[in-house]
Length: 161
Image (tube, rainbow, N blue to C red; front, side, top):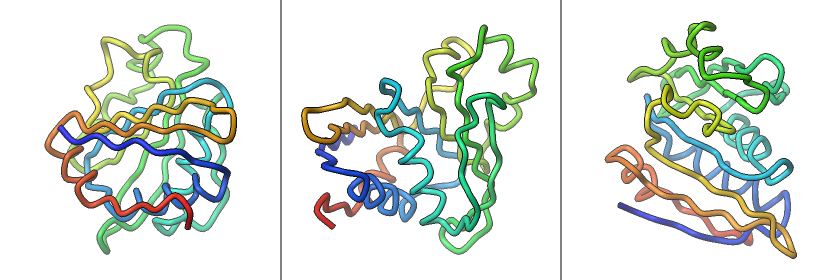
């Protein structure tokens, strides 16, 4: 499985990574974002959404648990669900809210704090781990499926853009 690790010196580098990831998204891909508070998970998601054509604001779904968006993926309108499970008290909340229905072959799912949904979430196609560094962030992208491999094989990212 493919693996990619890099440093993100600042917000601009995070935006550049999001722009690069937006170009290689596939319908139905599940992305898990790991990292401490303030590590860059929402900033990366915001950059992906804006690069994929979303014009409005992108708020963290910390209280709503999920925010739906429509974006362009390879020229086609595609639904993207942004989940933030930080405030979820139990995995049952995810099921009771009907979010499991969003996990399908058409909807892109980006999930912050996926460890809060252990046992109920599908395995990710792509796991992204953020670590706060002395300067900026370290980020590691790991493909965990064929879709994840395809996505990373198409990733063209230069952190100094």
